[in-house]
Image (tube, rainbow, N blue to C red; front, top):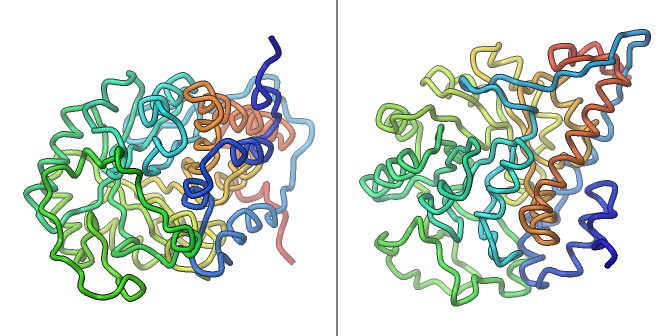
Length: 362
């Protein structure tokens, strides 16, 4: 029996093509689409590709060390699975398969509030490290209960998404009328009182159940005080926002434009990253996501000062094609490409990935 086509793929771009063939068109629009005219969606990968490398020669790279320390844990490599919603849309095993694939690939994973599987089930799916991504609810008691559930299930940190008071103009979704199938729910939000009905016609509605548009810096301060776990903020692009978050006591900053799914024409994360890194000044780790498709992209992000990178769509392509095995394959593709890039750059470990390995811009 011949191996599946996805097992013959040699990079994540090939997996994207194969995944589109097996995922329902409405689900694919949700997975692949960006906001508005999708300028930022295109810019994210283009910006990484535009960064040029400046390799050193005659460096002993016969042994490579990809380990990274992050919030008290030593990880085997710096590729992290970003939080993404509704994994049952692409594979019947959903989030537990993602967790198993992450563990097999020795990757930290971040579990979304908007999963189709509860934090308890995800926590039980494997024994690898994971964090919990949080959308703060207007019901703060419900929010703290959800945080406590994640902690009890084994989450080691809380990742607060700060760039989504409402959903962006996702035209692909609206064009296809995307909604969750009737048999899918968001278990983490079961029991939450629904919002008052929005009486505006559908084309005029802005606000969404599960998101609190009133979230402010005071709420971040409140969460840090009450979470009981380290709190990172995800969705930061501005250096001044990063400094304010660190001053409040966050444990880390994730530079992100939400996969280009919120506000179109914001900068690609490759452009935002060095400014945030400079502003933070090494006080906390800085992670980055958005358009990372190659091991060379990972190397460039670390040269620009990131501690680790997060991937989203690529591991969902792997999940759609091969469940947990597909997720593991994506992680291993990027890990191996990173190893190859480091060797060719003359960087035997992650500490050697410094700005001087980037070719000066004109």
